[in-house]
Image (tube, rainbow, N blue to C red; front, top):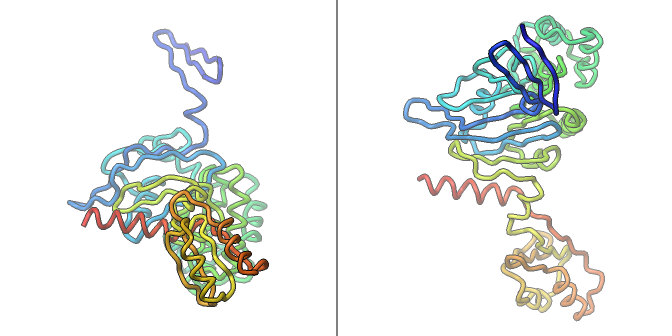
Length: 337
């Protein structure tokens, strides 16, 4: 005999000999990665990774080639067994309850593989037969429309452009409306308009899903991600919001004078005590990089106004992700060389 009752967000199962409790927090939609390791012989591709991702988060997974991004995604989705550590998806251990975990996952692998002899219509119907989404036909039609697949719906996948193959791959990943979406380079091969459409689509889905995106496109992180993890040599280097990452940049609060200026004005700006370095711009302008913790806008305007330049356009830089990415990953590579 087993009785079940709810008390303070916990389900209690009472049996004759024991009490089992299950907290909603552990069963809620989330990804939990604990001490994940993947070895290939003597090569450590993933080295003791741990992180969690919750609903409403879009996590950008960044790193140079060979950093372990795709390997980590394959382990999260159950396509690759870890050497050590574990992964839970929506409360289900991927190694122990793979079917339950994968039912809640949508996965766009690297390269968006699909059966090349099938048409997108045949392939997506095949996926629908396996995934069995609610309101199957209407969901299938909605996905096709959202990703603009109508023009190529009845052409073999092998004849499609890289961009269209990527969209077919994304369509199969979201067809069953999963709680968790894992995407490896989702905009790879798309033209600028298609990239914008996919990013808008990701932002819409992010309201009630967990989304993890592997990318090397820093612009993509700024466009869609609420959080970024940078890895190198299989290790996490930083786990922060894009805003906080930009603050690590030497260009954070740098001031760019967006017009050509006289040499005397240039020298006066360069001599400011708050300035750490200067960089010439192609259009003849000047970027002034602040010393750590210093603010440049007011001193720069003061110099310009003292020389009668009251309307010179200035740009205050928020920081550059590419600068932070390069600094972190280069240092990691040098420390392991």
